[in-house]
Structures are given as C-alpha cells and as structure tokens.
Image (cartoon, rainbow over all chains, first blue to last red; front, side):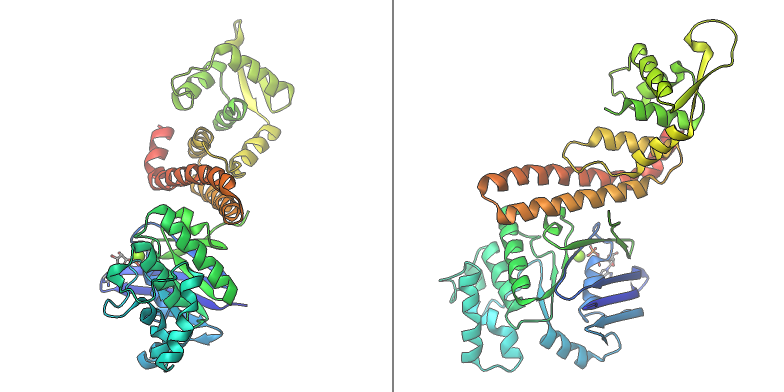
Length: 223
Length: 174
Ligand SMILES: Nc1ncnc2c1ncn2[C@@H]1O[C@H](COP(=O)(O)OP(=O)(O)O)[C@@H](O)[C@H]1O
Ligand SMILES: [Mg+2]
C-alpha cells in the first residue's frame, strides 16, 4: 500500500535540471525523511509530491489517485483538503494571532470562525504553547513560531504533512523538541509525513530515510 | 586494529614480499606509526597457518625476503566480506572506515557502495538512539546524544569522502 508515490519524475527550471527521474513511495502513516546535499533536488521533489509543482515527465500519485494531471484549481483544492505544510521559516501570517494562524486551514476550508478557533485551541496545550494563543508571530520565539506552524499543518487532520527543513532555523535542542512533537502528533492522527532535511539527526526521527543525489533518489540499502 | 585484514587486502592486489607489504601499509594506513617488521612476519605467519595465504619461495638466496606471499580463496573471501559488511555503527570509526575505503579503491572495488552501506548502518543506529532519547530519562538522553553527535560526524566524513572518491582513487592507485 502506498499513500504517496513519485514515478520517474523529471523537472527542469529552464536549463537547470532539478529532478532527473526521481522515484519514491511512502506508505500510509509512514514518516520518511528526504536527505541529500544542498541543491540536489529535495525541495523540488517535495513540491512535486505535494502538488505544488507539476513535473515535466513522470507521475505523482496520492491515495491511489494521479495528481500531476490535475489542473491548478484541482491541485489547489487537494492541497487545501488533504495536505498540511511546514516550512523552514514558520511563515505565519503576521497580522493574525497564533490561534488564528493555527485555525487558518480550517477557515480556508469553510469552517466557521468560532468552530475553527475551538478546534485550534487544544493544540496550544498539546504543543506546550498554552498562554500564547493571542500572540502575533513577532511576539513568539523561533521554536514557538515553528510549533504554531506545526499545529497549523496538522489541525485539519491532513492525510499528508509536507515539511521542508522544519528545524532549519532552530538551534538543535529547540529543533529536537519540534521534531519530537511532529512525530508524536503525526503518529497520533496517522498522518503520513514527508520531511526534507539535510540534518542526519533530524532525519533519525523518521521511520525511513532516502537520499536525493543529482535529482535522483537512492533508496538506502536495507541491511 | 585490522592489520591482518589490511595485509590480506594488500595481497589481493598481487603476491608480495613482506617488505612490500610493510612499505604500502606504512604509506597508506600507519599514520606515522610504522608497522614493525616483527609484526608483519608474525601476522603473515598466522595468516599462513590459517590457510588465508601461502608462502612461495621463488627466488634464490636466504632469509625471509625470498618468500612471496599469495592470497588464497579463503583469504580473498575474508577480504570480500570485511569490505562489504558495514562496521558496527559506533563512534570514532574513522580509522577502520578510512582503511576500508583506501583498500577498496586499490582493489578497484565499489567503495561508494560500501560507504552507502555504512551510511545506512549509521542512520539505523541514529534512529535507535533517537528512539532511546524519546523514551528515556535524562541520563539516557545525554548518552544517546553523545553517540548521535559522533555518528553525525562520521556521516559528514562519509559524505565528503564520497565526493572525493575519484581524486582519492588516483592517489592510491598511483
Ligand atoms: N525556482 C527555481 N528556479 C530556478 N532554479 C531552481 C528553482 N528552484 C530550484 N532550482 C534549482 O534546482 C536545483 C534543485 O534545487 P532544490 O530542489 O531547491 O534543492 P535542495 O532543496 O536539495 O537544496 C538546484 O540546482 C536549484 O538551483
Ligand atoms: Mg531545499
């Protein structure tokens, strides 16, 4: 069974080849880390898997459905309804409070404001953020902002969470707390996770690691 | 360390005299601590006793330098499995890993594959240590961290070495 699959994905930015036949698959509920040197194509692969970028060749499947052939509107709906995202710099909306940020995917999905905020609030307790609900992103530390971003990524109980260097801007202890919470929360709700990181200690939180080199995926040899 | 296996590996290139083995060992693997002749010959003696090499007396004259050593099937199998097997993922393996990489390149074997296997073993161990951290007390966490940071350093070395394999191959093959 596969939740997410890329088959022979090719993608170039103009003359620059970023992916040259990348294949990878992720089982339902599995946490997979994509590792590799900088510029090897990790983020591009993640963006293809998440329906943000459309490959020049190859296929992307999610839950048994081919998604690279969907049009922009359909992919956008798929991302909103089925996927959560965490990026390196939390990318919280600065004008909104922390709890509004967490509630955002629900609001965008058509949930009423009161209900969305009610669903967002337990995440503050769960991620050690109690008391910070009304803060704006400028009033949060890096680690707090990234935990808010994590809550936002998971609040709508997405089928898959895509995280691109989610600890890249944090010191190692704070990064570990975020990873620990990510793993615990994703496991609790059975969310499949694709995690891009160049950091082996972060990748060690995943169930499995793959390495991207020169736009291709080396599945690590199973010993 | 792995003097017997290193000498066996050197013998897999070609049958050699004891002094050739010592010279190449000192060149590539001894890092400033030359292998005493006595140890070369006692090691070769044990390898011969165990059927991993045989001695041939092909040249006239007297003394040990008339002898050339030839690796046997059993010896070659030892080298093969040593190179292929990842080292147990413990910190501070640089010496063993370095020896394996250089020997693999000398023998024209797939050094990158061995390093990939080693990387996998390292990552697996890092996963185990991370799991211990996630469930253990503070002392466990700190011990696991020590291992994790060292294994991470090994991984950086492995990645850099992979990037340098072509250049390194030219150096060790002369
Ligand atoms: N938007 C873009 N425009 C042009 N080139 C890009 C773009 N995004 C990535 N690239 C190039 O594609 C390659 C892969 O990039 P990326 O997937 O970001 O690598 P990684 O995440 O592993 O560091 C690199 O050579 C990078 O310069
Ligand atoms: Mg990237």
